[in-house]
Length: 311
Ligand code: KPL
Image (cartoon, rainbow, N blue to C red):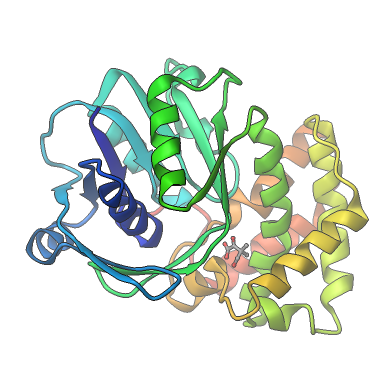
């Protein structure tokens, strides 16, 4: 089975290293030639949460290179880079191969061609943290849980099962969820509060809940988002969701959310796949989502770019 990790950001580097540690021979695909050359020269260095350092030599290719058909592609690029990565990766996917989507937010599947069967798509929802130190080095900063499941609700194949077992053998908390869309909504609700508010207020996740304005800003976001989730068939309680948001902020207190990091680096944010998605779906169901719309516009304005796609 030929497995590719598509995207060499923090999660991509970490998972390529983990797969190699588990005895697979993954191929890591980079967007830039320069990073491919660095990885070919130096390999990948993974520092685990306990501080153990692993240096691994990994097959690495540039996204535009010709390559043999791939059976499992773990697409670990940001939402904003998804259209390009999907176009490039589908050309390399075996006709019976499986595509794994690892993006934050919703709407990733909408980028796939309509002819591509959802039975071949696995969605991953993760709360693990990793920090990319350089093109070849990654630090696993926080253990979390990763749920994976079929977007079509089909049972997992034997190949997928083997991959899950490999991850588990390395201590990763990796679980199959037959209702992955529920998990996606659960994560979206959390990201819909923490990501834009930390980016707008320029605070860490822990500092966010200390802000006197926190509750009055978080409440309408969650009220609107849970109304849209319910229209999609997923019921969440507003109070428990706010409690979960607060818990995640405490557990990840020193973190600079991914959106805050994007804003600081002048990169395109994932706001359109998070609050923008909630506002878009709200329009479909006739549910008013002014606060989600407002934070979408505000984050777009402060990041100095529109909410469109990268590249
Ligand atoms: O997923 C995250 C992110 O930063 O994107 C949270 C949960 C907010 C942790 O920082």
